[in-house]
Length: 197
Image (cartoon, helix red, strand yellow):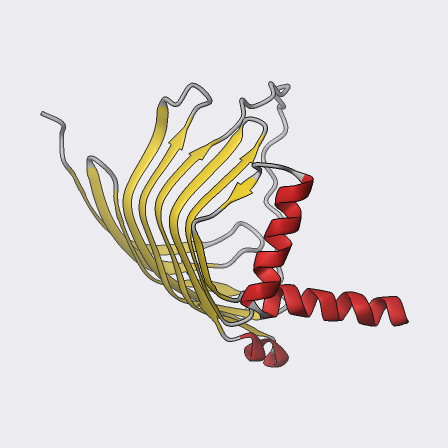
């Protein structure tokens, strides 16, 4: 019982304070030197958090993140609601390790029946300058900008707005998805393709 209480207090300190988060990242750096680096941290996970110049390295996995901002209302969890006010990320470079070959299957893809245990609201999501690269640094996917807001109601996922910009494509959408049975989807989509010259 005492161990559970001490563990809960430690997790609360790490996630609830800037100094706790810095301390946890320092411990990770001592255990795995060079695995996680950052330029600046402001805030804490349990409220609002900003991280600048984040670098994560685990083997062939690499993540560079220019700026990350997170703000949410943790007290909303008491009413079974995950309320994320802001999720912003800029200048993201992601390198994934080569995929392991898998055996082809003749079985059709079976989507799981999802019943969310709580309501979710994501009020403001912004992603700017995302690049997915192969291990040799060749870009596989480039996203200039993405803006989105969504929430759930009972068993429905409602996309309030989505706007994205790729090098040759701009699109905006809204709609709803029910993540059960055949996953019925209703979507309104506007898009424009710019042919490369």
